[in-house]
Amino acid sequence: MSPQSARHADLDGDVYVFPRHLARTTAVGDPGLDPLRNLGWDLHNDDLGNAYLTAPDGRVRLGYLPESEDDGLWRINAYRDPFGPPVWGVCFNADAPTEFVTAFTTALATTYRDGPDHYLARPVAGSPERDPFLAVDPLIARGWQFDRPSPDTFAITSPDGLAHLEYATGPLDAKSELDSRGARWHLWSGTHVDRPFWYATASTDTPAALLRAVTESVADPAPLLRWRQATHSYVKGRAQLTPVLPPSPTPLDVQRALAARRPTAVPAASVPRWSTTSRPALPGPRR
Image (cartoon, rainbow, N blue to C red; front, side):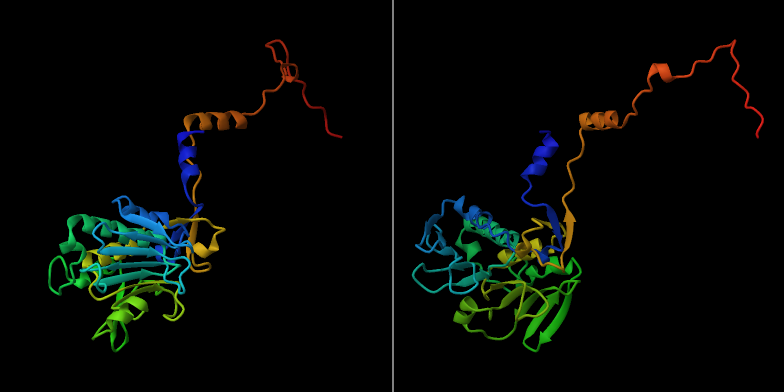
């Protein structure tokens, strides 16, 4: 197998999905778990098959919950006191693109290494590093437009109108932010908020750096790789699907192709022979 063929065989998909907010989950949890597992976080499973990751200091916990009672597949909470209530919480539902979850957990791994002043850094309006609307910048740069779907909600919407980042104004119930879609930040794709293709939520005090990591991934113009037959992994009828191109031919491939197209030589006996002493027969009169 040529190097190009090997690279093609390693691709986990046969179509590219664009725009990427019309992709859905790959149904594989490892990419989202790995950035934190690589830091040595404790991993254990319950009897139902749910997975739980806990930071060494006990202040950040991730649940990967395929057997939960709702569709909140990924739930990540951070604590100032490991025995107290969460300081912030983020949820990705079961259909959210795996790449967006991985962007979040990768950023979380970075902030965790930097210490609690980073992974517990509540947003501060006007701060050059902690302003909550730093999360909006990557979307604006890609042409997303501001909207006001309700008096208590600001939103920014993708050019195709099929992805939305909403910010709720006013006071919110801390428990509802963690347990429902009634959080400060609500990222979703679809034609109606009550029937999203997928969604993610983040509570008020989620660090701006973590929010921005997700919106940067959402705004990335590169398509996402999926399998055409796995229709659960993209929005069928809405997403643009581009087949993965075959690998570039090697010089040997080109040589073989040219050889296959070369016409067969005419047998020597059938080739007419002409000499300087012979003359071609003249055509006879027409009858």
